[in-house]
Image (cartoon, rainbow, N blue to C red; front, side, top):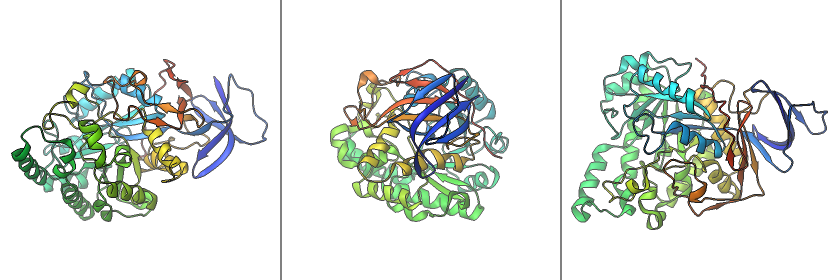
Length: 444
């Protein structure tokens, strides 16, 4: 089966040009520029007026399977991701049971093989005592190691500096870290509980999980990484202060990289009044100054990747009092549209969006043959319609939890078609039922 996407505006590798893309056997066979003679194909798609980009790679999602499938599962959330232009995800270990052994990790791979709509990999969770499991991962298929340096579920908290050092020394993989200092957070929480009890107004979340808590933990992780020479990737930066810890060298020359999430680029602390616990994330959404600083750090090359930390909960769980409301929210269906909207508002360019959401994740993790529109690469592609807007409505959400903190927002662009390994998995508002997903492969 061959497919020809004709006359699209291709945005890729910091260039915008009109092109046609010929797909054969899951891969991009040939890219034709304007006025070149085009071959015949089994499927012809006229993309005149549409934008063609590489598929989005999200390096941090929580799809809740196994054990938490009342909130979400790999099938439901990968479907929502496909609707949002995502073609690959890397999923986190804090499921139930937590993925802290290679056996448990293999069980996740089997679930994804049978149910995922988009390409997949997973991280192994680090604990204070599973160093042997970390050493034994298959680096060609496992994206990396996840360390929670702040409180988490089960036994996923790594709170021993010697263990952190050992993990960075031993893994040989990307070690991704959630950096928040528990001591500072617990002190702040105690003070707010003394004043408000359990029902603390959510607007105080960024004062409880404070910039100080983030910086102290990130600074310590960076210090240890520099001593060991290990490969540290700091997840979901949320403060201006942490940016000083980072370098703007090319990714290929960095040992310490960083990611920011779309919600930290879209919301600020004024939005708690309107949305309350719906935007309660860890780390917290912070000030407008932090938001603007994070955007500037992306443009300066100090932050490398934009992802979601997609972490769905049922709405009734989120609407509990502050101390019982879980942190996290669903974002994969609209993360690309949020970034395109910010580009429309002149914060940065669409070329920047593709760099941070497609090219850089592929380069940072060493993902083979994905993240770019290149001949010989897998045909993970997205067609975007710049002339049809998207209104976020409950009835259009594909998440199992059926809510979004973005409900009511109208975005200028829409995701028209998502290709995974050359097959159309989402088109004109509907899943096609096609499951062409593959396990991601990594350079070793």
